[in-house]
Amino acid sequence: MPYSLGMNPLSDLDAAILDFEETAPRSIGRKEEAIRAQLDISPVRYHQRLNLLLDAPAAAQSHPLLVARLRRLREEREDTRRAARGNTPDS
Image 1 (cartoon, rainbow, N blue to C red):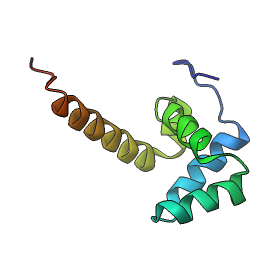
Image 2: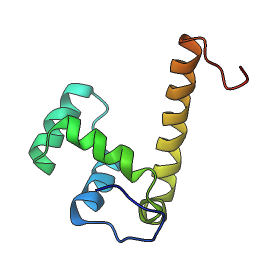
Image 3: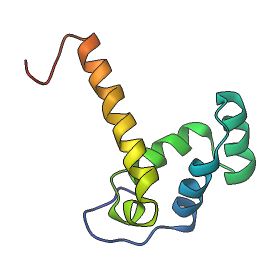
Image 4: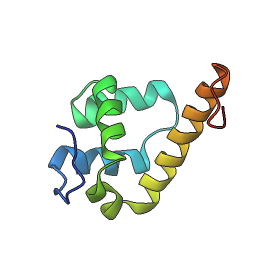
């Protein structure tokens, strides 16, 4: 379910994903195991949902520091990919 610009409340799963991300293990393997064990979803689905949540106003309201940090990291990765392809924002 994509988020609109409206203030839709977070679902239980969305709230759980944000809570999990705040305390998630740093090791990729351990994090994937914890996603499956604690949230009962695949790591791919988890990351897809988390990426959608970064654009949800309700997520930013409930976890402002986390969402701001993850948005910044997402933008940095996009800039890196763009630079690797030779597509800079100034071009």
